Image (cartoon, rainbow, N blue to C red; front, side, top):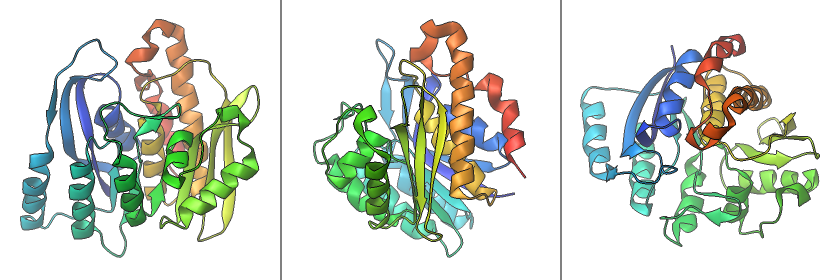
Length: 278
């Protein structure tokens, strides 16, 4: 069984980050280890919440892993709350990657054209340097624009040709495989486009466009891609599965539309993930 370690925050209540990643990866047949980067009482869509930065624990935990000769087939990182965390986890990658490991980075830092609140203005600079260590990156459209320093515009105004250029430009920064999410294909469909530099394969994965925003879908998408890649699937296959699964989760959530802010109802769809494993 493959083992992935994922480094991102965890909320005691709320469907995002580690709370979503662990069950998704488990259902894809992947053993999941974690280093929580922050502990939140709830996710940030609640009116109030507490947050404990766990940056000081990254190095001590890493040292214990080394003492116990613990190794990982993949390192997968999600939201990181500070430049310090980016730098420390960059060092973690250097210390634990090997010739066969896969480094997957979800540069979760922005949406709808703006950087997440609480992140410093120079965070993008740190992230540009960080993604050079990746084999795979999974930015949304806003994050792709920030990483490439290109103007953001309405998602439905980006052509497939422009997205293709962005995919290839990001790949030149280091990662051999790139997926851009939140791509609008038509008035009724959206999904993701991907590029594998090694095989020079460009692909798109389309799903039904749903109105509104659904918290945690990016975390679920990246987790499905990670699990499928560890099952030796192509990037195109992994992206197709991720788009389909996120769509199914949204469909289940629409049955209780007032709960969109809480996170998608992925639990009722977890059984479907076994069908993605060969």
